[in-house]
Length: 355
Image (cartoon, rainbow, N blue to C red; front, side, top):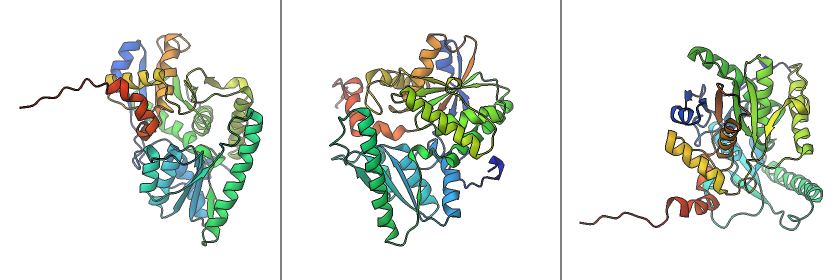
């Protein structure tokens, strides 16, 4: 399929703004711009709506009535899939890792407000297995759960449209291939030149789309991914294979090798979406310098990685950097992250005045 032939709906507001982080730029002596994909408009916004523009249209074209996707209990993609379903008169199911939390918080509250069905995969009896065994058992559990959930919907007369984690299918990746075109047009209007675009690296739909878009549109900037979870060489090769699948699907003629992509590790902290003090320091810095709120799972780590790359000169002096804010702010309001912040921002030193 040719990229230009792909149909879409509009699940959010584009074009999202680009502006300079003036205080941060001055502090680190590097011009840093930010692309505000946290401002896509619905259900508190985020990058996944760009992918859902294409996925929802494909679901509608196939006469599907349910969007079914996957993620952790605080999945931003799940929240925005629920939002897209609401906007287009569809149902939404989200299959989540682990067991249900005792108390709803963060994205789960928003999911339920929008009427999403939540299903949980209990992996506790093999959580501590070696990685390869865990992966095998997790895959089997996911297949079993998916089959049972789809059957449940079909018995009610529904037709299900499965969407992978993060919306990272070939069709979903089109969202960020096309985002490069938007970025280039905006930079031209602003008479700005960017050397690097820095984004989070997770399920690869955003990074992969940006990478292919930069090649396809001959963009003058390099795409840098900051990994938000630990990745082995095998994991990264799978991501490269996915990018090549997308290229082939759209007949882009771009062949990607493992050594071609720039993905930085070392900023994961304690693990995927696990509170960590170092990431919070960077979240507080952005809030106090620019009044922009980052999240602890994705953008906080991405911003931390960006600043560390500037400090260790992997990003060249005199460069201009575009930081992609992918959203995810509701994650701050999850129980575990709120608890982790209490002593840092609410330490008992409360100033109370009385008459």
